[in-house]
Image (cartoon, rainbow, N blue to C red; front, side):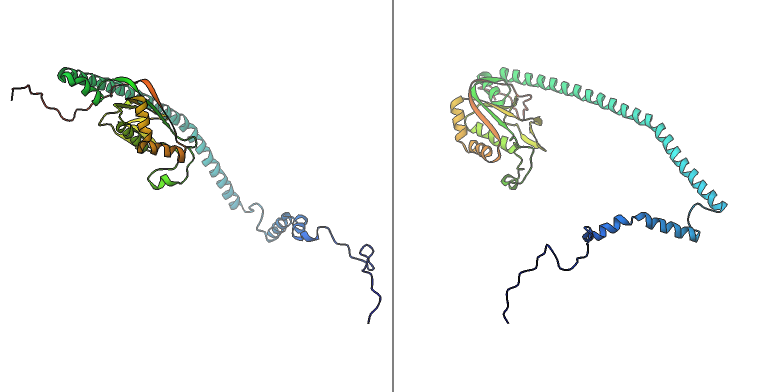
Length: 302
């Protein structure tokens, strides 16, 4: 049966009354907590205990004496502990001062011994250089140069190798799988390749941070530190090499070791710079160790 279409009801004027609803009806749990605090529960429990006679202060004399004894014992323990701490504080401070003084004395003694070792090492080096000059004949100067026993200067190159700017940030990378840590730090193997590349490119003498290298020098690592002949070096690492400056620089950069250093710069941010120098000065090696020696025989003698 069809009829006239009806208009939808007007929601602004409802035909039946609507019950008023609290605005916080949807937060009944929170409202219950706010209206009924936990103090009511505590009060109820206290009243129940009081009614049962199990709450409040102890009623019997024995219980009161036990409580008093416990309080006295706790106060005694706290007092004795405070007194012991007050007595031990000066002793600990004195022991600390004595330990600091002992460390300072031992440090001074170690520094003195190190200076004595350096003095003796320099004396041995001077004697070895004199022996080379005296018994080496015309080859004494060349032997001293090749062995690192004498200071040298002349044209060469200056190569500076430094850690990446983000060297303190760790992370994994391709170098880690090859035994390196991908932190942007220069490693002992890097410096080994740099020095060997310079030798192969025609360097006549090499030094790192003023430490002269010889045929017996060793470049190792102790943690993150690089050691040259057991002496720690700090970055940046300045490598000086005596040789034909421009030619030595070009040959090194085109060598496999020079390309390896360039790859470190491109891939890991290690900073490098190389330049030809008109005159570089290298000190003598601190100590030249003689492994084998034999007397020189004159011609016509057996």
